[in-house]
Each structure stands twice: as structure tokens, then as C-alpha cells.
Image 1 (cartoon, rainbow, N blue to C red):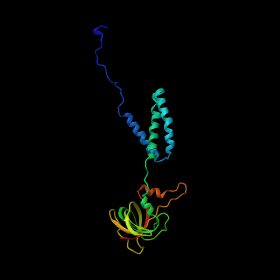
Image 2: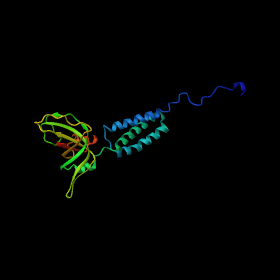
Image 3: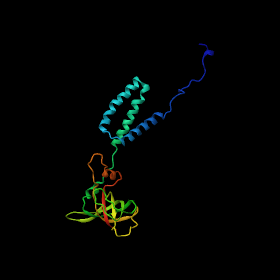
Image 4: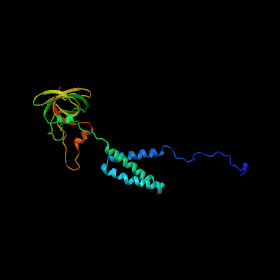
Length: 225
């Protein structure tokens, strides 16, 4: 080949239609998030999901060799399954063990700080499993700092952890009080109880609802300091 026949134009080092570098990561992220969203509505056994990962991984390998144009289908399913599995394996809120042990129905003196307070109402109300009572009431969530420990050898106030959902009642003949607000410290005599659990199929689980809010026990209180 003669010198004047040589093409001296610059050669492109990269393809002009090269896909963006972040595109695969973006699709992997939203497929993984889709799997997490599915886990909130449909519960699947983590063991089944783990077993399902193996055949889907094999399909991804076969698609990479035989049908690269369709590889996004098994890969998308793989990322979604990983999202569901990770969501199922995430630790769920659990009741405070020390407060669970104190929720035995005995009358105890408890102290703590109000972290959530509802309005004062004047109507018939009751917690699940309780008899409705008349008079002003207020529902508050209290983070305990101490609780009375009663045993055969001692009756002392000791440090305690956990949150109690309290239903504070006042006598029906009294004027509705101003109530308690967040940040106030209270001292009360209360019977700590674990939330009731209904075994009927499809029934609302009051205990799980409170645990998701970080609440371990419930109590009805009539004497507040």
C-alpha cells in the first residue's frame, strides 16, 4: 500500500454509542427496591427465597451465553428476589425484655418521661380487653426511667427501660384537666400488662402494632404525680 493511500483519520478508542456507566447500577437499585416493597405486602419464607436464588442464577448464566438480549429478564428477577430476601431477614422490633418481665399485672410505682401525648377527651374509652370507663382520659406513651421491684426480700425502685402506653383516667365528676405534654416527668401507680393477642384468623394484632411503635406494655392509671 502506497503512502498516499493510508487513511490518516483518527481512530475512535471507544464506541460512540457506549451506554452510560451508571445505567446498570440504577436498574439494579430500583429492582432491589421493588423487592423490598413487595416484602411489605407479601410474606415469603426466606428459606424458599434462598433456594429460588440458585435456579435464577443458573438462568442468568445461560442467558449470558445463549440469549444476551434477554439477560435483563432473569437478572431483574434475581435483584428483586434479593430485595425481598434482605427485607425478610431484616431484624424486626422486639419488646424490651426487662419491661416484659415486669408486665405481670402487679401494682407498681413507675417513673418516666412522656414522649407522646394525645388530647384529653371526655367520653367512654377502654383499651382492648378492658371494661369501658366514663370520665376524662388521655393516652400517653411514657419512656420509663425506674420501676418498683417487688419480691419476697425487697421492695425497691430500680432502673427500668422501655416504653409504656398509658391510659390516664380522671374521675367523671372532675373538670377536664389540661393533661400532660411531651417532656413532662410523671410518677404513677400502674399495673403493667402485656397487650392482648387475638388468635382469630385475620384479626388485627394489637401487640405487633404497639411493638412497631416501640411500645412493650400497656397500663391504666388513676393516680399521677
